[in-house]
Image 1 (cartoon, rainbow, N blue to C red):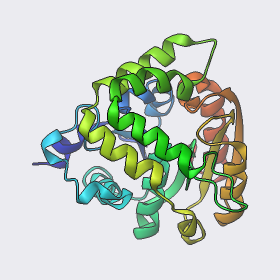
Image 2 (tube, helix red, strand yellow; image 1 turned 180 degrees about the horizontal axis):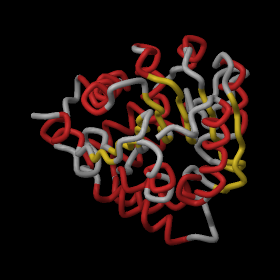
Image 3 (cartoon, rainbow, N blue to C red; image 1 turned 30 degrees about the horizontal axis):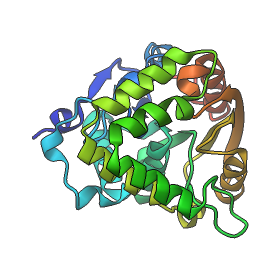
Length: 271
């Protein structure tokens, strides 16, 4: 099986450097439709689906390999090897922000910049760390998801999306969740919501933008502040947005923040 088949990869353009977009839990590459066109004219761009999501090859889903986010990070490095001749700009949403971070720690020479959209290194409160949820909250969420995935999806997707003035986005996320294979989704949810990569933040050497919504149930402002303090030299940009998906519900502000970050790195005029 090729990388293209496994991850449903779509590459376009020939600018430099290459930008790679990676979606979050329960989503697929179509979630980048508002950001991708703005960069496609100046850079080579790569869209793909995490294994188990979207139009990826479900037969490639290995419960052992994907029992941690490092399995997805290994896939990402293979996508980079296949589709980029040099270091990439990586833009990852939610759990994929952590996947990109792990890949960049593993192979820093392959990354020139890392844009994290709505990231969280840990969802669970721990002492002075505010992740947004107690362990019992997460256990309850996972228990509900296990027993009634479709019901959980229809209840939680609009809450996660937020954006009360754009209810169609909540419907879209619900449909996206519901298209995902339930058994894979349950497994990926457990890996996502129980992951703790706080200790990895200090190992990051890639220039990093933390792009966060001003009101996000899954990644409260305290999480962005924590990440800013612990990722060396990182930049924190707060987008005025309610919800966990600013690339969908506040795309212009997300594009502006990303361009400002890339411009500061001298990466905006390539291609």
